[in-house]
Length: 171
Image 1 (cartoon, rainbow, N blue to C red):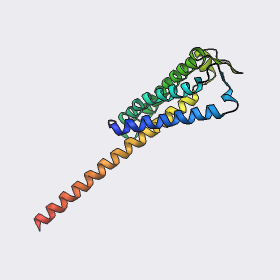
Image 2: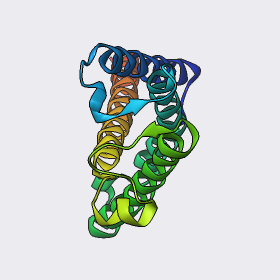
Image 3: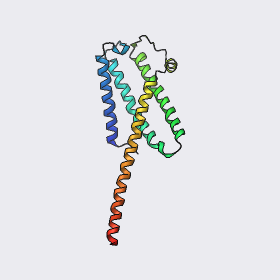
Image 4: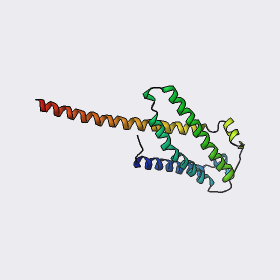
């Protein structure tokens, strides 16, 4: 089912809230999440950029969940599709945020130095992003199921009213 304007505002509000929480956590954390930024605003900017990236990806994942529902047969190919799309998205987000963190905002590398995208893949640093994707996919599936349930409920009520009207005409 297509996203409504209200859905898009909810997605934007949700990811803005996540960015605010992440920013507050980063600013209040005495250890600085293990990174020392040269620019004081870098952690806040990174939080908002990452949340904005997820806000753009969320409607696409919702659309994927809506078009390839698990309850309509061919479950294994759809699970494989969800998995590989999720891996692609997670790796892409991780590489982009890693590039921004270390090469654009020049966050000082800590104990686990970033050695580039291949190193990040080998060390599975993208798994947090994959979990975010799974949560978005679950939310998209739940949204789709909820909207279909309410649509069928409204159809049922309409059909029951029509049946009652026809029975009244027959009587």
